Amino acid sequence: MRGLAVPQRAIPCVLMRGGTSRGPFFAAEDLPSDPELRDAVLAAVMGSPTGRQIDGLGGGTTVTSKVAVVGPSSHPDADVDYLFAQVDPVWGTVDTKPTCGNMLVGVGPFAIEHGLVPAGDPTTSLAVSLGVDRRDGAVGILSGGVTRTARKLMSGTVHVPAAVWSG
Image 1 (cartoon, rainbow, N blue to C red):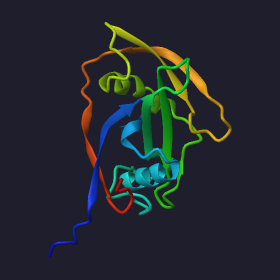
Image 2: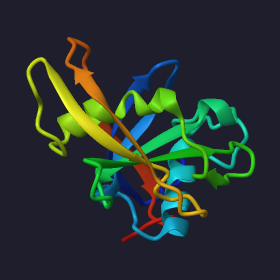
Image 3: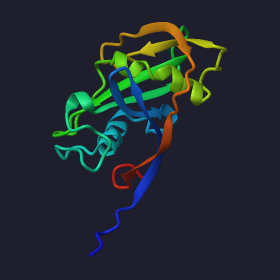
Image 4: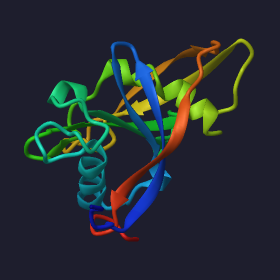
């Protein structure tokens, strides 16, 4: 017996490991600009609130349900903005107040692959604006370099129910 088809919307993403963490990386332009709607989409992508996140990309625990959102910087001293989101598998809440240094490791390669910064040879230097969604308005800038390696990124799309985001 076939289940009911639920209308879905495709959203491009890259699954990437950064340090000891892994998760989907999204271009900010591919997600809703409204924070509440964006968080609903991220919760759906991760499979929350189901507890075990079987129907999503989450790892079943808060520390294994991490998302990176990367876009052109809104800060004059940075090349890109990095928003880290941690999704609670049980409640489906999305916390964007902390940051994650492990996921930050993937921001440079993602920014290069998506044309947000030009690739250098052999190293690309970039400044990343951290905490752009923090309620206290704090913004940190991290500068560093990215050395290109032979590791391949896994690009694709994820689908969320159209009832979550049909725009």
